[in-house]
Image (cartoon, rainbow, N blue to C red; front, side, top):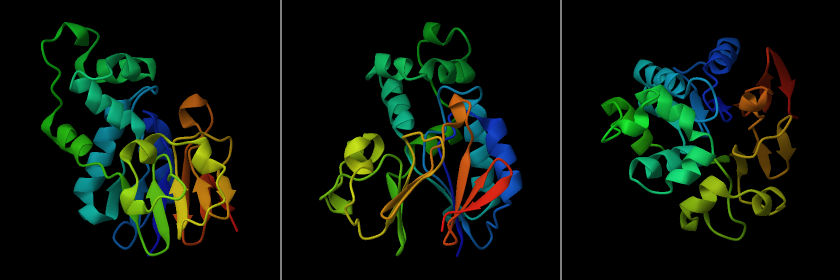
Amino acid sequence: MDIYAVGDIHGCLDQLEMLLDEVQPDLEQGVLLFVGDYIDRGPDSRGVVEYVLRLQQQYPRDHVICLKGNHEAMFLDFLQGLERELFLFNGGLGTLRQYWGDNWDSKKELILPPEHESFFQELRPYYETPDYIFVHGGLKPGVPLVEQEEKDLLWIRGEFITSMEDFGRLVIFGHTPFRSPLVMPNKIGIDTGAVYGNFLTCLKLPKKEFFIKGYVVDAG
């Protein structure tokens, strides 16, 4: 079974549409997986969520896998009245405007459309297969997968990225942007900074092919 893993989108709907048009994933047989951070910073966060929701409606639910990113966690916290400045500091203002307009802060309550509420609430902290672990931020070295804390799964960076630990399976992650995909013996990073003027990446497994801006790169 082929798995198509897509890096951090951050509201870059045009890039997502162009990338998947290029990849043309077979979602009747394979799996399309998003590593999180659908929203914030980019021009159309709501449009990205609606696009992914259409994919989930079009194909079997277990063939479109959506992981939670730290930006989705911050968004949910914000809607609960928690860590509001943190969300705004990390590019959340655009997301609020795309959902509730420029006067979002004058509304008594910010309520998501029901299908969007379900989308955010049902995001997975990680996804595993016999060969791979997919996660947004990474894994804390020395901690079994089932004992990992969500904060680390969503936010960890250096401690995980520099680790040469054998995590038992190849770890595919996003969260930390690189100019090109990071390929290491124990991990592959696929956040290539689409929202920062770089590009969106899709990794096809098990062939380890990267789809980047209309061409394919073999990861070896």
